[in-house]
Length: 582
Image 1: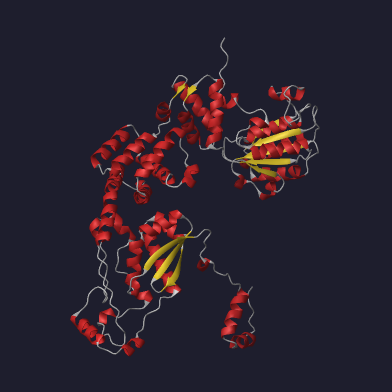
Image 2 (image 1 turned 90 degrees about the vertical axis):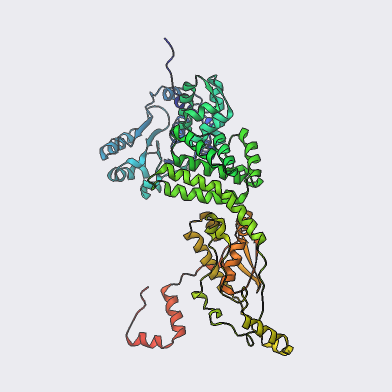
């Protein structure tokens, strides 16, 4: 008779603290508590599913009752209590599933069992899994026993939803937060298992399984069993991607190359090929966003550690990143983000997907056309006329700042049409010079030099700069340019001189957004103040906007401020016998 098959999640469940993967901060603390005899009467293990909460609870229960622990504070596995634990015949360890035993009667039965001392070993351990499923009445019945149990009783609670547990329960427990297991730790553990099981597996295939599990070791082991059965013990990258119904990196590399080549036909045919295989459009959009994010990370060596891809693929990502302009990546992420948000509300989802990628095909052409037009645009002629001598037309009189409206392109114009990139002519004398104004200039040339002392130049205040910058960010938000809006929100603006303003960015990526939007910013400020400003940028670490830090005033502070402005307020208060409502 053949040996009974056991799934990997049970077969390779850790039996000692040292074999627990990715939770060293918890296992070390528990071992030190056992070694120093500082055991608490109640523990709460919380964290995502499949990260080792119940496993650590069982190992802790086994170790504290072990008769001959090792020098490293691990269970020996040979004594009577260890063997009874391994055979599930121990009378000192009780496991309760709170999902199905959540009534008051179940908790009362448990409380009655706590009164009896252990027949063998030092402690009686009660492991309650999914404790957040207990009812309100069950929690209340459990409170007194959990706070003051007998010296031989230890409770170990486990949950995936810590926020559902009563604060009175949390205050009675030592809380241990389990973290998601990293992709590297899962890959290392999977390599050990495939070696023991004599399975041929490519590192890229194991990396895909680890990514798909999202930090859950149990899910990773279940996928390993399923795929190894599907491929008869040979795990390849292609077979793994096919079985998990995922699009491999090669597809996104091909798709990105066709977008940069502006080949609409090949792009639509490739999308049709993938849609015929049953993939949803939102999966393609999300995958393309992740692919472009990886390319953006490869632009800076400091961000390479954030690149979560197989080692075999990293050289290709670096090569493709050097061929892709950062402006294209940021603009494409904006387009993809808008399409992802509107995808679920679209009636014709295939057309919505195709229009998104057609737009991406034209994106590079629009960016290049914008750059060419900006370089070929002539420098504007600036004529400075003393206010005392000039005779401006009525329509050139500047309006108050709050009433002015910019006559420039919005930041979204770069995505609409290359023809729309040319800014509109502001209604001022810097762009168009009338015959009357030329006569005035001729008169000024022959005017004595002393007349220039009356020349008045409008001063741009920091408050006006901040107000204009706020309006520009609001324009980005309304146009749903989330990438640029988020980056500009992290910056502050400083007035260097009457002819220069400087953007203070927290990092190089934010500064690159200023450089890409420099022409739009220049035209935006020019439309408001009537002259050209020089836009510069600077990277300054840990920059905060002091203007956003507003003092919160108490009611007493508000009364004192009002009293300082009008002392008669005190007389009114006393006459009417009024009191401040604190």
